[in-house]
Length: 307
Image 1 (cartoon, rainbow, N blue to C red):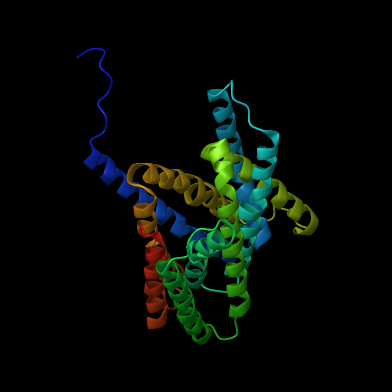
Image 2 (cartoon, helix red, strand yellow; image 1 turned 90 degrees about the horizontal axis):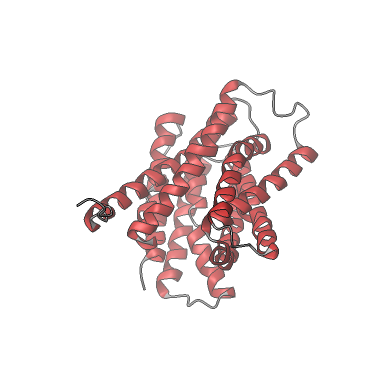
């Protein structure tokens, strides 16, 4: 009838759409390590690539924040919350990203992705220590499995990449996982106060300031204009295809099917990265790579299960 509002989406269709968004978002996130490696092969360094990535994504997050403010004209954000969100950008989007990119210079995309994938277990430990959340037997077992998986893949990488600085690479990426985990734990009350879009935008904009400052002090003397055209293309893909777009896909998936199913689907991310690294980058692999991946994925699945 005329004047009727659109019928709500059938629950079954909404579920399937959510699952599809979770899979697509996970796949796009998995591409990140591949494009970083491709940019490194073209002469990019971690700091310059991170600076380009943040510069390309900054206008988008500024627009999102402006739209959030215009949509709620009577609502004002507390200055203290905005400063805290910008400060948390240091941990979540500057330090974690810089350590991750630096680690990727020394280890394969496969090992990097799996090492970074331990962050849900780290979050569980931090929540137990500082938020007094119960550390269940599932979580303890999951932590053991996650790191057993990393050790398996690490041992394989030592044999496959003799002469590379694998130790340093793993330590840097583990540092990235810890930094991001602290960010996740501290961000929860601010997300509730500001809302997810505003918090994420402010944190990203704050991190851009830290990245820009780092580049101005320690960046290449040649600046950001001396790279091949392909590097700027890779940075643009990293900014939007591997960061902005999948973040909205994952958020919408959580809204449709819930956080736990989305997390479980996200467990296939390292598998996507492994397949892409072998097919596109020509990285070597072994049975220990595959076994380590499966063990760690099972561990994260245990963390994500409803208690």
